[in-house]
Length: 290
Image 1 (tube, rainbow, N blue to C red):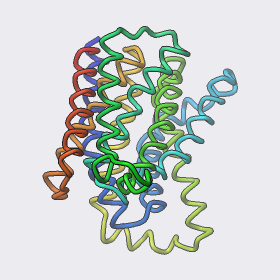
Image 2: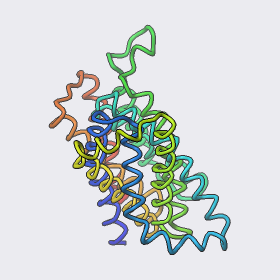
Image 3: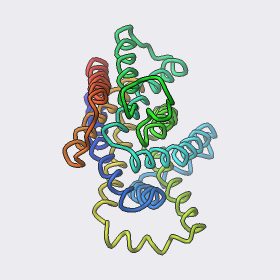
């Protein structure tokens, strides 16, 4: 439907620009403090819509378990993704995170019973090849494979698998119940979990200074991330999870262009080939699937 496609494209641009601000925020603060603010902005923004729906959890235990899974995945995967942004080039990290696209589609096929065409598989293979080249810090050759990995790329790879599982669970939750409830719960889990971590580390007093000096970055990353997840969740209620994911994952192209234009990131020739192949594959898969 038009509403579903519109929501998916909103997620596309919000994620692309939002990840750019997330990288800036993690480098200005720390991963834990950036995640705390990201979760807090989303949780407070969506609280008026989520609060009236919490009473329904007692009527449907399945929704409760899905919410717990969403929160657990957010607390596990989000730190990995932000550490990847902090350590690596956004133009390399983003295409690797684009791996969550074929993984989410695979889950939608295997568990959700959605169909995948032959040409979609061909494009997924192209994305895989591009990701391998983009992740290599130097041209592939014999030797220590660990030396070939760009900083942050391994974290992004692990995060992509977790993100795929999170995408599928949130999409399923959105189709079964409220799309906003899952997004709110994951952000609330981040705020609470990271808040406890900061208390244990004795870093809570730094939050006030962060707000004074980096309020714009904090609000930008939080607002865009919340908009993106709400857009994806709403798209999943009107479209198959595989289609909603393929369209929204084109944010990789937006983030890569921002990283090159504003961060002045430089890629080696084989990485340009990999980034181009990964971005083109994701865009083609999104366009045709949409």
